[in-house]
Amino acid sequence: MIKSRFGLSCAISTPFERSGAIDHGRLVEHARNCLTRGCDSITLFGTTGEGASIGLAARGRVFESFNSAGIAPRQTLSTIAAASIEDAADQARMALNAGVAGMLLTPPFYFRGVTDEALYAWFACLFERIGSDARDMFVYHLPSVTGISLSVALIDRLKRAFPGVVVGVKDSSGSWENTQALLNAHSDLMILVGDERNLARAVQTGGAGSICGVANFAPELIAPAAKHGKEDPRIRLVVDALVAHPVLPAIKALIAHYCHDPEWRHMRPPLSDLAPAAAAGLVAKIEDILRPGQRGA
View 1 (cartoon, rainbow, N blue to C red):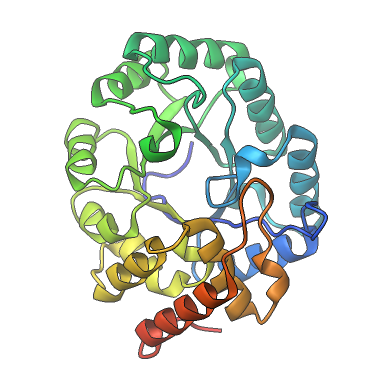
View 2: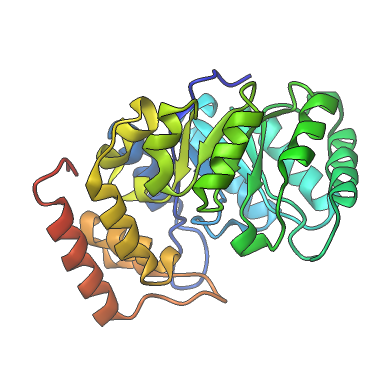
């Protein structure tokens, strides 16, 4: 089971070649860089990583690349993103066989308007299908993307029914009220915050850390908030600048800038690259925010 102080995990962007294939060399190099610069782990196939567009075979090749590169499984988490129980179980088994430290579990995002009872049934069927190997799951509350809210009561039911399986929540609602409700109700779970603007406050009041996208280009900025609850006003400025654009290609534009590698900008369809003018404006704004700070190499 993952230690109670989770720290900072980079919700890693996935570099793609122009053909749409995953660029394993760039991915491994980027993961190593993030770990060197203060991230405690790497979370693969998340929202920032365009994980819903990455199939099972391609996921397996990523695990092989990480293993060959010597990136320890204990420093890796894998996101499960599937609407069907069968596909979600296959993704989870592959991640477990790779030895990952934990999994970020997305609810069945295709169907909307479902009840807590129906969601509980989906999660329960999934855990039963995985069997005794099921462990270290962080349920993923991301209603702006999935269209599904994970209530405090549903999470309570899951953690009681599946102890050691449901060990935490990643709250990417962007709502401090929701994060606070989770912290108040679930002191026995690791509450992770996806919106970096609420991170330091959450850690100060019992939060365990973060899986987040800003760690792709400014881990030194985020690490003190994720690990020690240290406030930094630049975090809000950076995130506000990001969310003024489509966030996923905006993060890739910033990685491309700081890596001096324009090939990083490629998105996999149906997502699109950030327009060059928008990317240039974003880079200038982020550079201005971080200039006196500790972005690092």
